[in-house]
Length: 124
Image (tube, rainbow, N blue to C red; front, side):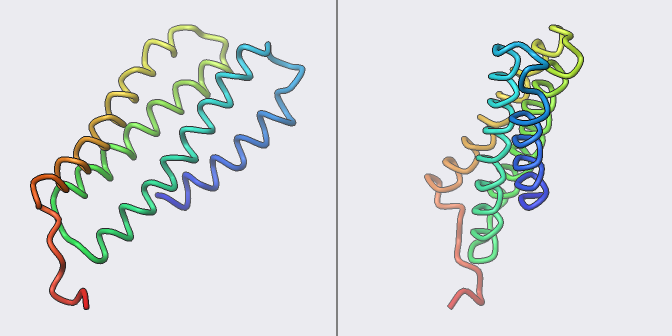
């Protein structure tokens, strides 16, 4: 998912810069940029969580990863849809994605604070 989100962030960011510039308002283009930016940041974060999962185990890592996947899809997806359809109702969906992203970050932090991230038996 991290690689797919990273790929999508690059392609959608480029599309916004080259395909949408001059076709949508500057305000809508800024929304598109925000969606691509968040998608790219969370692609990187998902990669870090996946690498951490190789060295450590913990249900909080899984919660974090899935919450970030869901949050990225809803947050960025709703913003992309808002720009492409010019339907403001998509903006009402975006906060749900933001909450899921926050849950993901919180799960990651909580797992670290509670010591639930234990080294795996083969982590040398």
